[in-house]
Amino acid sequence: MSNSIRQIMAKAYKNVLSNPREARFAWRMQRLFARSETRRKTVFEEEGLEVPPFLISSIATTCNLHCKGCYARANGIAADTDAPAKETLSPDQWKAVFAEAASVGINFSLLAGGEPLTRRDILESVSEVDEMIFPVFTNGTLIGNRYLEFFREHLNMVPVISIEGSAVNTDERRGVGVFQRAIKSMEMLNRENLFFGASITVTTENYKEVTSSRFIDSLRKLGCKIIFYVEYVPTESGTEYLALNDEHIADMESILEQRRSEYADIIFLSFPGDEKELGGCLASGRGFFHIGPDGSAEPCPFSPFSDGNVIEIGIRGALRSPLFRKLRDAEALGWEHTGGCTLFEHRDEVEALLNQSKASS
Image (cartoon, rainbow, N blue to C red):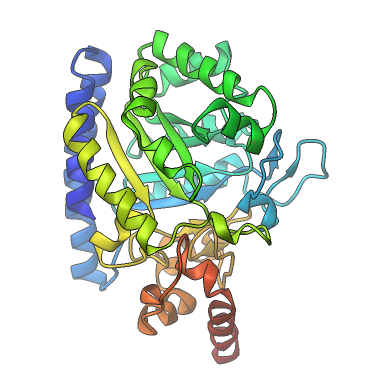
C-alpha cells in the first residue's frame, strides 16, 4: 500500500510540473509522505499498532441530489438538504481527528457524505491540517467562484467530481442536467490550473464505456488528472445485476493496465478492484477505515457497524477496535463475494461479530 502511494505521488508530481505552484506543493507532499511512512513503521515498532495510510470520512449528512442506488442514503448517512439535522462532529472535532491521524502517519482522508460541499465550515477547518491531502468526492453541482477560490488557497483539498460516463447514464442516475453541471465544474477547475479528478461508479452496463480511450480522452481534455473507478454495490434491491462479477473485474483490470501504459499523465485507481493486488479487502484498518458523520469508527462505508467513536477513543483506539480485530482475525477480509464490497455482501456475519464484541466487553 505504501509503495502504491509513493507511485501515485511520483506520478502526480510529474503531472503538475508545468504548474510551478502545484509542483512545489506536490514535491512537499512527496517528502512529507516519506516521513509519514517512517512514522507508521515507528508506531508499529513502538506500539504494535498497524496504521493504514488513508481514511474515508463522511463529513456531511445532507445532499442536494437523489442518485439511484446511493449507498449513503441506503445506510442512513444522507438526507435531503431541508431534512432535520443529524448528529455530526463539529468542524473543530473533525480537525482534531485528522490532526491525530496525521500524527500517526495517515496521509489521506477521502471526504464524502452526503455532499461534502454542503459543509463549507468543516472543509475550511480540516484544510488547516496541511500534513494531509483530502480528496473531496462531490457531485460537482455546488462548485462556483467561492469554491474555486477555496481550492486555489488550499491545494491539499482535491475536488473529485462524480459522473457515470455519458450524459445519458449520468443524468439517468443523478438527475437531468447533472452531467452538464459536472462538466462545467471541471472546465472551471481546469481554467484555474487546479489538480482535480473524477469518480465513476462502475456497473456491468457502463464499465466498457468508462474505461474506453474515447471516454478517457474526453476527461483528459477537460484537465482531469486522476480517475477513481468505484465498483457499484447493490444497496438497492433489484439492482444486483449491476454489480461486477470476477469475470467483469478481471476484464476491467486488464483494460486499466493497458490504459495506465497509454496515459502517463493520468492516475487510474480502482476500488475495490485494486485490492486483489494488495492481498484482499483493505477495510477494518488494514488499509483504511471509515469514520461516520458522528465519529463512529466503521470497517468501511458499505459496512456501517461500529463499536467505538473516534472522539472518545481516538484513531489509535479505533484501530484497536475489537470489531476490527475480529474481522481481521476471522480472515473476514478474504470472504468470497460476487463483486463490489465484501463486507456489504457479508453484513450479517459482520453484525454477528459486532454483537460478539459487545457481549465480551
